[in-house]
Length: 204
Image (cartoon, rainbow, N blue to C red; front, side, top):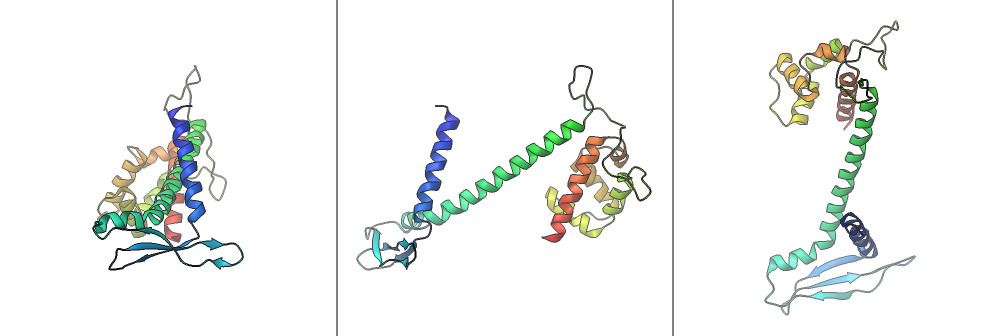
């Protein structure tokens, strides 16, 4: 069994153990004789059973030690939720990278050469002409909401004007000029992805 298999098995075990107690009701009770954790276990079709002492703490227990144990279930749920979000983002980026690689030009040996591809794009204008992504990006850079989106996305200060936003956009897409969006299919795809993220940001 590989190290990756060990980690996967351990993660499955953590999820299973958390699932067993996830619907139980835990309550921390403060007592002169020592704090303790009380549980009311979930019972299918009934609700919860009678209170039972799950764990007691010695009077000399450090409050932080008690808090670590008391919050263990809640903290595990939070960490697993964050881990699931991270996995979902990794899968999304892998799909995006694979789709982008399919669009990028290749050399004679079939390797991606990173060069420009002047072939047709996925979107067209009203009259069937190639979509002018450069002009579209210029308009977005003048939009205060798009400027705020760029600032939050790149963790930078809010752009002072459209020129600052254009600079931030060039950094985000790794381009020297917005004109590249009309020449390079891969860069155009990156722009469409960013544009879609902005639309989602507006809805959030």
